[in-house]
Length: 295
Image (cartoon, rainbow, N blue to C red; front, side, top):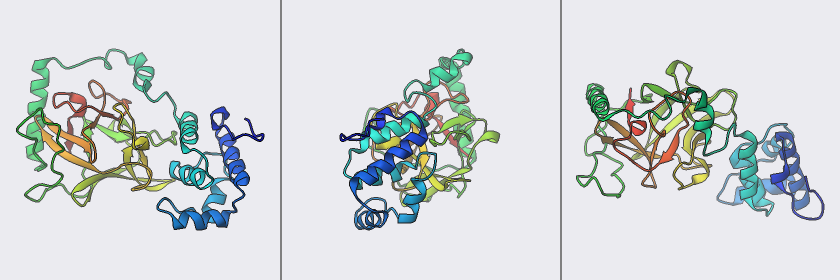
């Protein structure tokens, strides 16, 4: 790692411990004490970094949470992007775009499989009946199916969704990998879902909230607030690191989960399958990978 007179280069680090060392050197090079960083971040609109929290984060062997890295790099006057890119490279178990093909290659038949029209129709009918049975009342789609306008986040009648409702996709549940500290979300058998999560009301919107045994309460959101289709979703701190509010929209066969500030939908590519990554995708009312059920 280059630590001479030029700027620190986070792209050259190869381990989490080297990343933390680079952050320490960035802090030292800025000339700011822990207390000064606490005062400056407390006065801004971003995350406040208490001196004790920062000192702990910079003396561990694992990379800090995304919002801590962002706040520290910004207050030290450096460009946040290469630091977050390096952080994701170190933590991400696979490249952002091709994780599904890489992991699913041993299970090639399920990954490219798409339900033929008759099976899609049968499946959507069953899902629609299930949605009625559990009394899910959500926002209805526009009469003009070609419209790209955002659905109204609230309904004219109270929604019967109860606290603790769970999203399922093709009978599978949303989950992190227990050994993966990125918080990236995948599909898993529901009895293996980790950590526990539920739908939680947030004004006229919804959040998918979690409670991690190490990191505590969190919310599922779009990584780095990206508008790019194909961006993964991860669990992180609620309301700070990434957009984590959604609308729920009923379509034929299920419910679409839409990030509140964009015309995109949450789901998986192709048919739902275990270990498929949860992504932000162009909305398709006929895509089985975007038709959630709520239980």
